[in-house]
Image (cartoon, rainbow, N blue to C red; front, top):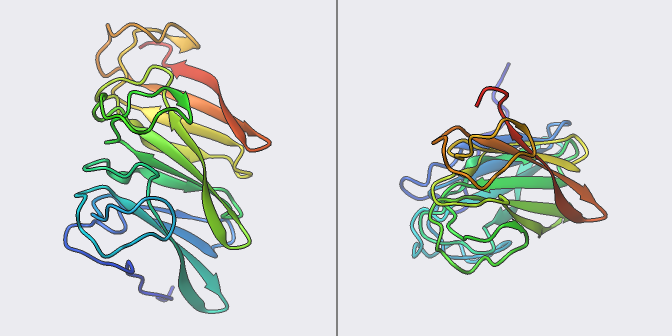
Length: 220
């Protein structure tokens, strides 16, 4: 083994924690790097990196390799970047070809539920969210904003992620979810089993995401 590259953020700052999470495409030519305490108030793709007005909003950096040279392809922020959302703290996941990116933000605070709900409120602190991005011809865009169907304060939805090779199936962990249900698609509405946790499974068809399963342990 030998070192191939030394990679830094395009806007390194103290305590940004660049490298807290990573994902690599199957061919090793696309790299996603999380920086959950990055502080810019920018939103979306390739916004202003220079301000530090939104502490721990978080960011993801996309790098691509051509020949023996790595370069930054995109600087990605949540569409509703806010203080202490820690975008990428829940990890990042890439499809095998590096064209689909999932990013967890455990500190995100909207009380929205499901797919592409209202991102603008902060009435459910640390409920968490997952953001889906897709790449076409080198250009990245946000495809979906995903919340738990039973989003609640401090559930930390998005604390862990897994994406299928083709990017069409997503599993999301929520380690502080509190239902006492067991098995698949039970009652999500009770809170009688503190920190029992849950997993949510989503599928994509023709660019639209939907929830396929709500999964609890067999011995919650």
